[in-house]
Length: 402
Ligand SMILES: Cc1cc2nc3c(=O)[nH]c(=O)nc-3n(C[C@H](O)[C@H](O)[C@H](O)COP(=O)(O)OP(=O)(O)OC[C@H]3O[C@@H](n4cnc5c(N)ncnc54)[C@H](O)[C@@H]3O)c2cc1C
Image (cartoon, rainbow, N blue to C red; front, side):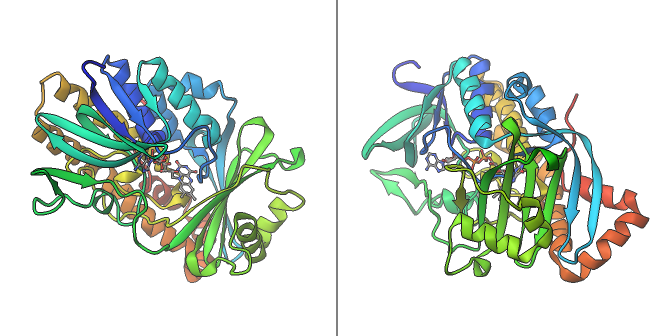
């Protein structure tokens, strides 16, 4: 950092923000990485790192440190539908099961080792343009402070309605402070909860150990189960708001509700109970219809749009957007690209890579959750396995191994 000014401030230190910070710090830029949370922490996620995610981690030079965390190798997908039918498919490559508790921490360490300055418990509350750069206002333990950066990247995760709502005051007639534009950063979007995501770790019974990611569908939601490091099992579930049990609206109550609606899930988790301290919940979980990669600043990860959780590809989109954004960010800071060119090229790349998986993701979610289709799909997958694989493939980013 020179004269209190960073080259780049990355808002949000989840998967996307940490990867962005690491990529930019590795190129020699002064990076500030801010997050309102403290880490390590348990986060709602299926903790399934898809083959696509692994390919991008490799390109970002991060695969060795993730492999050292002892992830579970995952090779297959098992789907249990509400109708009782089942579908089994091989994954297009090796995947990992690894907790966000370990993964996010490993990415932070990698970013810090490359020279990024990590600021945790720092809640970003506003952002304004000043001269050629930006001023980021953030709060630490109730005290407001500011930092300056030549560029700012938004990686604050998924909110209701996406980034346009979370960076809401982009119009010129709003948000002026002393004649300058101020964009309040909304961390808690006002929309009512549409769905809730939960997760918990279980100690895995060695006899049921598997190399598959398992998806269980039931009325009002679905659950993903897969092995992670240290012989543990991660269980993540997605429930519609009206299906949350009124008497027990906590993680254990919701897991019991899910098991009550899916015999197969109840059998899978029989005898186990959530490990102390591993439970987490998030709401609302709103999936995106189309990508919005720019809101006055570049956006990465879920801030662009959220793919349905059952696709298990949100982290690969977070990593891929960070990778693409870092290339343009680097070119801009070197003076090889203008901000307008960054916006145009980055928006075009995200739209061309993300639009189809987001659209197909919603379609596949509809098919798998619809009671009528859920009776037909196992039969169709048996007679036309190629079509089933193509449908799954359509929900995902390309495998970037080049
Ligand atoms: C139920 C469920 C299951 C899922 N399962 C999978 C799966 O198995 N595989 C997969 O690939 N994806 C999965 N996903 C999606 C995946 O979790 C996300 O795509 C991924 O976490 C996105 O990363 P991100 O960095 O964009 O956002 P996040 O990881 O959400 O990070 C955003 C960060 O921004 C911080 N932040 C927010 N506001 C502020 C602020 N004002 N100031 C400072 N910091 C702020 C937050 O604290 C957070 O750390 C699942 C999602 C859900 C809901």
